[in-house]
Length: 187
Image 1 (cartoon, rainbow, N blue to C red):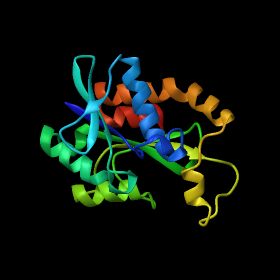
Image 2 (cartoon, helix red, strand yellow):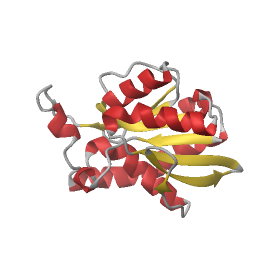
Image 3 (cartoon, one colour):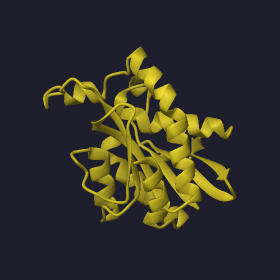
Image 4 (cartoon, one colour):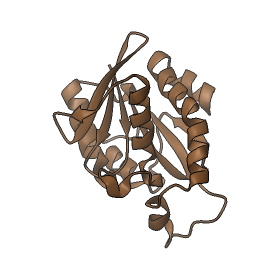
């Protein structure tokens, strides 16, 4: 079984914000498979889908972004899933909107959700998809929180809509192939 975690913040206040791109992708991916989220047995919402005979559980932690690791650890323990069989989908301010990077491991680069997951798993060795939300305009350290918690513009939403098939293909590739294959195909 594969677990795909889409990171974000729960509640209508955060809908369509840049920081919630993990939730947005996970929601739309579930919709592609006509699946609906329900409360999980921990601090998350979940749904099950089948991709080429691979059982996949889509999970949206409701611990808020900065505590995502609590839900990731709970879920991986509950379902007995190894770190190599999870995929974390999250926003990356330093990648341009319309760009993705698949990684096997790495630093948190200042992302508090990833920092929390690394802490709770006691390792940075877990697959992840960094989804670019960056802009050509420089975002200052002081303006970073407002930027990531800001809503996408109409123009940005159009870019995301165009990228959605790529995001979906990436998630499906991860479920059907090796991580190396996914990295080679999407980086």
